[in-house]
Amino acid sequence: MQLSDKMNDFRSSSPAHIRLTAAIDPSVASSPIGTMRVKQSDYLLIDLDNIDNKVITREVLPRTEKDYEEALNLFDTFVELHPTSQNPPNLQTSKGFLLWLALNKKGRIEEKPALDTLQGLRRDFQAGMRKFRDFIFTTEHSATLKEYINGPLKPYLSTAEMNKNAFSPNDLMIIMTQLWCRDSLEYRGHPPDRSRVQLSAAMLLYCFTSARTGEVHESTARRRSARQLDGEDSDKILEARTMAACYKHFTLTIEIVDEEPMLVLTYEREFVKGYNRKNAWQIPIHAFYESHTEHMPLMLNLLTFFLPLAVADEAIQDYSSVSAILDAANAYGTGPTRNNVLEVIRFKQEALDTPVFRQYTDLGVAKSTSKARGADSFGKSIVALGYRSGYSQNITIRGCRRWALMEADKKHSETARMKFGGQMKRETFGRSYAHPLSEIDGPANFLGIASREEHIRNRRGMGIYQSFDACQYLPAKAQFEFENREDIRELDSELWDLSDRFSATSNVQARKEIQKRQRSVYDRKKRLYREAVDQIREHSKKGSTISNTMTETLFHYRRRVMPDRSILADLLPRKVSLRDNDGRRALQALETICSEDSPIAYRESLRPFEGKCRCGTLINE
Image 1: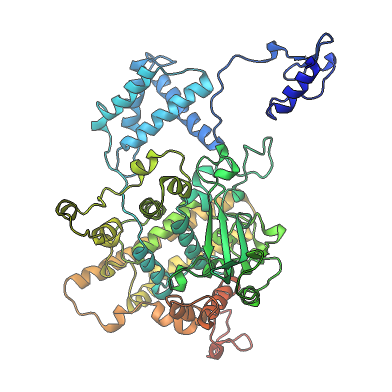
Image 2: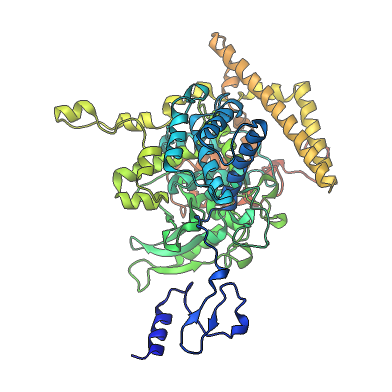
């Protein structure tokens, strides 16, 4: 074989990123790698002077680099305050730096920082020193610092840990029932009840996929480093609105399932942890069916909420209503076909990058700027809903993920569970997600008799922390009295005034100040509300007689003038199909509240006439 033939074989078999392509002139030897043609052979030479001798560390995301930089800034501050310290650090300086952090860092759970918090700062510090300052800690140095935190520094740290409670199907049913059948909270935005639909769809998406919070909603950690659409490096400077679940991540089809045409929705979790180092085939994809294998309530079907959201956003290309989509599925006959995928229902090109779950101020698609809702904001709304449902501890998305992974671990292989959870390390589940309550019924195991499993579901979920007597909302009569208090009416008036001022100004700094004041007023109102709830509960504990009116929720009265909410409160708990009459009525009501501009849905007999209420008062007043 000739040398030239060998070179051609070598080039064709080389990976794309190192493949040698066409020869170039010596005049271009100033290129980054300095390649040049040598007349005596077919080989291309490179200029080694243009290549450094540095160790290349693993690429990390911009937000991770920022954590490294913050740790290094803390170290620089420590060195500046302690002239006898060394930089790069020896063991004495490193230990002193960790002690200084333990004494000065504020904790999130308790006043002192948690042990895991300091271990995280240590890792960021060591990684930053290696990446930005070419200083590599020895194995002994790193191990010493780790044990220093676990040992001598432990008295200076909080040992508090996040609870390991999971969010069970029973907890989900309690939360959804509260949200649609008892809850009178007025959500912000226009249309306001779209937030309620978004909340339901997001909860089901987290429970059914085991997704982390930052995958579906805008990750709080990405906010500061992901605000630009275009930049010098589009791979590193990522736009915030695309770092959340958008319509491009969903695929809606009509397929043959169990010999019946059925709507199938799939979701690709593009932003799974470590997505920047994963290949496309490593990204988890989840499927959701129009109907489950068992009869389940409408409120536990993701398509119940996703379809109205998509239709209200005008995101679907060939269909303008949910009813039209259901009719299209009905039009296909039953039985086997050549292709089980009957139709792909496409999303409009302009809607692909639109987040499904948007901010309160960005709900209406007509005026939307496509800003995804933040993970922190969503987490707080779930916690608040949990308190209104009677839970004494925070409900978290991590709890949803924990239950989903524990169930997957029982019923599927380890490989399937890792794929489902988007995990790369097999020890992650046992270390971070497995509940401390053993699955093994000890007496039954020892005695060789049938085991019980009730204790697992009862104690792994959050049922032990839930009591309807502890619901964090006021009964109807007390709610009316609270809203008519002079101080509450003043706060409401101030909130309306601030909202008008915010809309009237375009000055960025002025808007920030107004938003800061709005949060302050809103927090004060919430604090007064909690005080009123505590007074009612204390009143109940003393054995005082409470009238029947006090036991009713405010929604019990409001639903009389809210036909769509009233219909949904009746239909969503029912075990019916989406294509049944009740299912279609529920979908129509959801579609209405997702697209209705008016914050009030009137019954026909109560609609305004000629701009006036039935009592004769002008609506604007």
